[in-house]
Image 1 (spheres, rainbow, N blue to C red):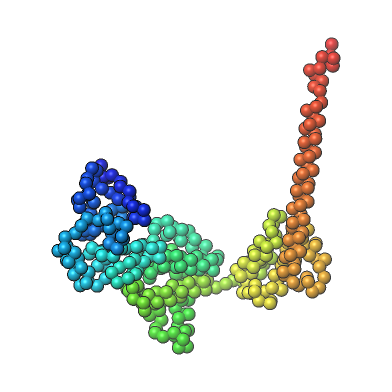
Image 2: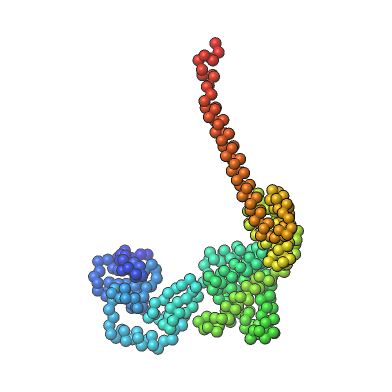
Length: 355
């Protein structure tokens, strides 16, 4: 419950934000509310804002006694920074929580754990429902989460638990198989369990060597997600992809590329894949575009870029024709409306009224 005896006091420009001070209080040290265990911290927006090292805010900080400063300096020299001590002892340096879960401690930047929010977990659970249909899509989503949130071993366990038991086992098996191949060839030192542990390895994420193990683990899981589901070749699904009436040639070609990656083992960027895309683009475009493309001579008819360029020309011409037709329709309707408005009403005309 908010203290009615508190009022918001604006901090100077460049400061931490609105500070809380007792109403009617003077500039004495007791004016500023203090967090327990942090003699030089004011409260704002539900967080703490350190005054040490900020010349803009030092003028608002209560003066400390020499004995307090000496004790605080001795404590900071005798205590080695760790995530635990950062929570149990007063902090000397400012703590900055960044999106990538970093904080500033006595000895420099450190990593702290910030659990997933319910919204983030719900979004992930909803996405992985379609994992078997499009494992590559889920793999890319996982990669994006890694870049933005940097999940640790426990976070990844929570993410994998959203899969079915069979899917999770397949992902882990695939990841460990990739590691085993590199360990066996001598390209990767250590053991499979060291790189893809089944139980919490309790890595210290503030240790550079162990943090690198986490980053590699994230990549192994991404590979597992991408390759765990065997790709089923289904060319018939690819031939069902038709260009829509309002779909641009570029959008249609992209759908063909995605379909080739999803339903076949062929790489759209390979020579064989490009030839197949040419055939699909020619045969499955809309009628007007297909008729125009079929008139192209060799060797241009095998050039995918030239086919797309010509398809765009037909598509734009179609849009111009549609605009012209629409303009004529509007003009005809307008003329008809004006003629109807100028025509006299025979029923109300006195001379035309029946006897």
